[in-house]
Amino acid sequence: MGTQRNSTYQLRPTFLLNPAQRGTWETHLSVQQDIATLTARCEYNETAKAAFHRVAKKYLRRLAATLALPKGSYSIHSNQGGIAVSGEVTLHSEHLHLWVEQSCIGSADRVVWYRGCHGQKDYTGMVNHAADASELVDTPRMADLCRAVIAQAEATDKRLASAA
Image (cartoon, rainbow, N blue to C red; front, side):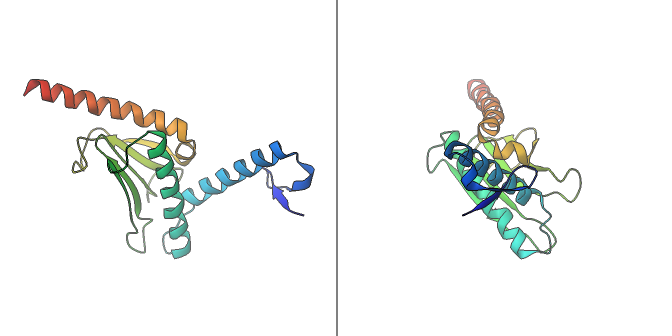
């Protein structure tokens, strides 16, 4: 017989929940754990850093699928960085450059940075945007934010091509 924690971290026996509630509680708990993993400081902690990179990659793969990016048109890679930093996990496509990292300044929740770009070799790109961990784990919401910058980058590419 299992137990689970609700959003206020009170233990509840899982047999008391009907199957629909079990899925909802388990999903909610999993997402809350992922947000905690993405925002927990991981410098000087190899285990926390590995968890941070694993969870970030999971959500970047989901985001790529939600955006319907064709395989081979994007890359997801991880740079562990040194001991004093979180490192970053990056999704880079033809018109989107998004990375997940913990900043040593600013909000601990603000871990996602993204911008439009012009190809996978464009590392400076367009204007930076920031998002919280809670937006990253809300894949449809993050996809909508990314679609807006992708559309801007595509429009810029069309203007540049027509001017040439």
